[in-house]
Image (cartoon, rainbow, N blue to C red; front, side, top):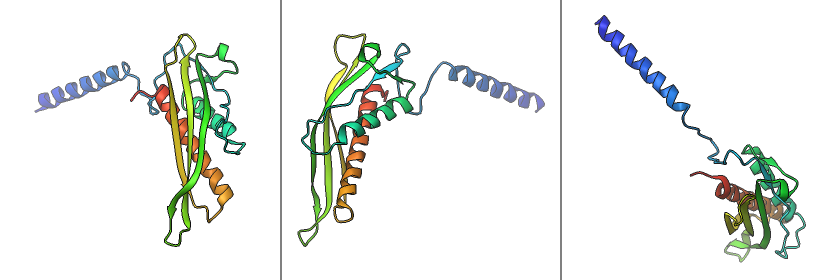
Length: 175
């Protein structure tokens, strides 16, 4: 009986040692980010707003969302120049819509939907061709009856956050 307990203890210790050994062989990130070891910096310029929205904050808010996402959720540092960056983003805000989404029985809008589309390119500085160029869409609804101006702004910010999250995941995600 003592011998059986001793053998079980040896097996448990061996399993624990093997687990620790294997844990050192694999790396896991809770954000799901996969960045090559030689990539350290990212250049994220202001994306021009060609949406004709009339809203002056879209470009700045998108830039802020992208910078926060790439700097705070990865080990990348922000570069002030595309020539000094390992990763380069470029793009344009191509469309903005604020339309009724849900209408009550009295032909009154209960919800509006803000839809924003951004055309973006992601490229490693060391490569001649972009990794991808694609459209990203963000949508968010708000109640125009509560506070139409702040509601639209908050919906636009949420839509831009969704775009930044999707660009981040498509650029660095390892799903």
